[in-house]
Image (cartoon, rainbow, N blue to C red; front, side, top):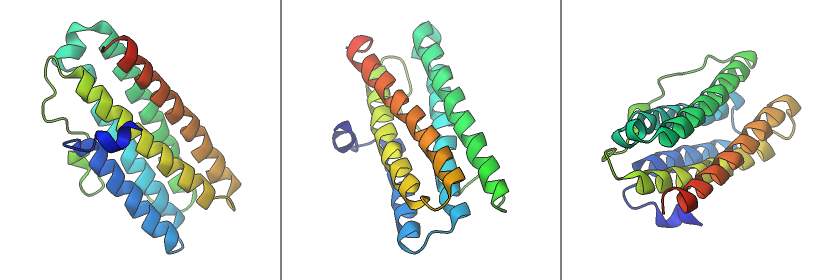
Length: 174
């Protein structure tokens, strides 16, 4: 799996992994539903920012397919964020759109022309980590069918994102 090999300077993956570890610790301790969903929402916000940034990067502006693909990914991630925020509200919580450390979670230090293969490989590794997070959360929320269905729906989308990124890495970015 790419996740292990892409950790090097992949700050995006490292932050997503920290969110997953935090969620795992919360689940082990009984896991307050709102806090767990907030963790997932933070990952989605980071993805919105990351994909949006790549869409308007030098490569994104010069390659319509990059801008189109990344803008579509950002829109999907934003939809996930909104769904999670709604569920947090339904559960009596208040969604936090500026979670601690969020400003660094989407960063790509060298988001400049010619680095698309690295950026997409980093995104793929982060998506794989997010998939594991959603699988774990889905299992944890087995006693809450509404939340579990939401998480399973988002998980399916994330699996599609991963497949799309794998296709791009093997067809467009070789």
